[in-house]
Every structure is written in structure tokens, then in C-alpha cells.
Amino acid sequence: MIAKLVVWAADRQAALTKLRYSLRQYNIVGLHTNIDFLLSLSGHPEFEAGNVHTDFIAQHHKELFPSRKATAKEFLCQAALGLILKEKAVSDVFNIQSQDQYSPFAFSSGRRLNISYTRNITLRDGKNSK
Image 1 (cartoon, rainbow, N blue to C red):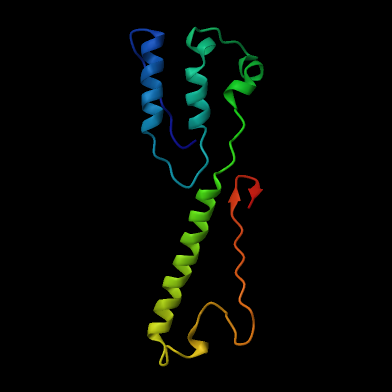
Image 2 (tube, rainbow, N blue to C red):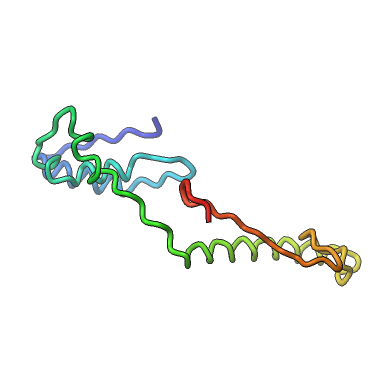
């Protein structure tokens, strides 16, 4: 358990509003959380009405766990560009520290003379690789 959240208010609707507000205030980095699920659950009309039972999650699975939309190709391109620029920055520092920054051996990228240089980047969006 990372954190426990308890809210109360004058009535159920006010408590759920407070709960959703509080869930949105969490800022947890590096770990998977169930905050999105809890927001979806607490915002479901049947849950808000108090019509909750032991099969509630199974019965409303499609609404509570919507399928993820594919990441836009623009975001993937931006991520790849960010990786390439980071590698270039590291390589530039390496070149500056080299005695002969114009030497083909001063590159830290692994590039070699007379060989075509190809750079493959694999990005993972959930379980999907691009």
C-alpha cells in the first residue's frame, strides 16, 4: 500500500466529489497505481447512486476499464527525438573532452568509418512496441 485515502462529508454525493478531488491531487511517480480506476469507479452513475454489490466491478467492467487508446504517432516521434537529442548531448560532451574532436574515433555513438550508420529505437506503450 502506498497511501490510504479516507474522506467524509455531509452526504454521499459530497463525499464522492471530495474523493475525486483528493484522488486528482495525488502525485505518485514511478509506480503503477489504481487512481484512474478509483476515479472511474467513483464517477460511475450506479456507484454514485449507491447501487453497489459484490459483482459491481464484474458487471460494469467495460465502463470501469475502458480500452486504452493508441498513443498518437506524434508523441512517439517526439519521444524518439528526445532520446536522439539526449544521446547527441552526451556525445557532444564526449567530443569536447576528446583531444581531437574531429577524429572519427571521438564519437561515442559507435559509428564507424565506411559503414552505414543505422539507429533503431523501440518505444513501448504499455504492452505494444512501436
